[in-house]
Image 1: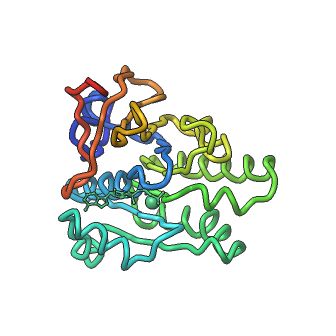
Image 2: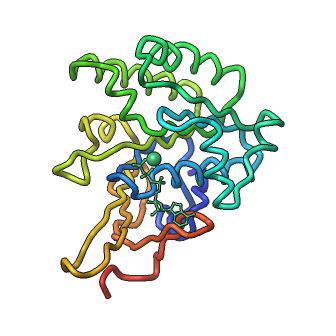
Length: 232
Ligand SMILES: Nc1ncnc2c1ncn2[C@@H]1O[C@H](COP(=O)(O)OP(=O)(O)OP(=O)(O)O)[C@@H](O)[C@H]1O
Ligand SMILES: [Mg+2]
């Protein structure tokens, strides 16, 4: 099966190469676990392979994204200039415009731009545009259908539900997604520093690792220590 590398050392091994082409993958994690870093790293890996990418941010401005990427040593500017990367910032404040752009403008861009990789960071803010569960489900499902029509591989990040690190805030995207990757902070004892661990809890159609592995956010981005054990 064709796959797209995440650019994250260790994780691509756990995935036996990368994210299967045209999968929608949800990356779940509590604040600060590295969801945006994951998303940026996935986009940067695509740009290195000359793939057209869209980074849709519902949180951070275009400038901030470029700045954050540069700290990790990823220079996005030439790709923006050469029209290989489109950064879009949507405000979760202006609900009507945001919903309209996601549901109508974005699919048009998919066609004209020939996008291979799409990031939505975080999808939670889009989900919050809808007040009740049935509306949210319907809009999310329709949006996922539009994405699937265009053969795009997607990473969407999501906050977790406060009581369960394996569930997204609204408990919806993990069912719509083809894959779910969970980032978690765990503490062996109260006085020991937190360890961050990664786990592939779902990845349709491939035989992936089910291990829980430690990862760090380094100056070059996320590194998964796939050879290490947690708390060894
Ligand atoms: N250059 C860096 N070097 C090392 N660690 C970093 C660097 N930049 C960020 N971090 C670590 O990554 C964390 C934030 O990562 P990131 O913004 O990707 O998380 P997030 O899950 O998207 O957070 P949020 O839920 O707030 O959106 C920081 O709290 C810090 O621990
Ligand atoms: Mg973030």
